[in-house]
Image 1 (cartoon, rainbow, N blue to C red):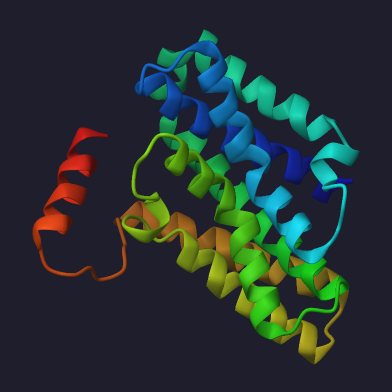
Image 2 (image 1 turned 30 degrees about the vertical axis):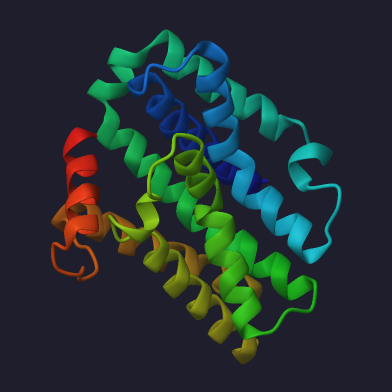
Length: 214
């Protein structure tokens, strides 16, 4: 039950962050809600379709969709308070990243995937919604140009697989990768850690300008 509530909490945080991008881009109400829903459940739905777990869990349990709609409504109705407490929203987002990483890895293993598939599904579950969000507003996805985000999910997925192969107790198999992913993301946010990037070629300058405009 606790894990389910954390999953919903992370979904809400993802939805709020996605919807806020729609608010900043001056989309209409439907556009903001679409970004919120896509960010909240997009990664999990893509994962389920890829591994053949249909219908996706977000359609089996519509609580997830209701939570994403709530996130969109919060961004529309209270944009200034959300901006004021954005650091807390990002902390909640980090919790969602960690929970989704573990859920993605576990579900991939249940469907018989190998280590690469497990790590891929862990990262996809955690970051797929954000990629959909960015593509919908026609910007280079944040996970490939900014932040220690997908990297934290990948490392968490690898750790989950190692513990899975070691056949440790289920509680440790879940909690250790979850806490590691969360700590990695919070550490990266606190110290502005990011992967090395290439030099400022013309294309890189365009990306830099886009970041300055965010």
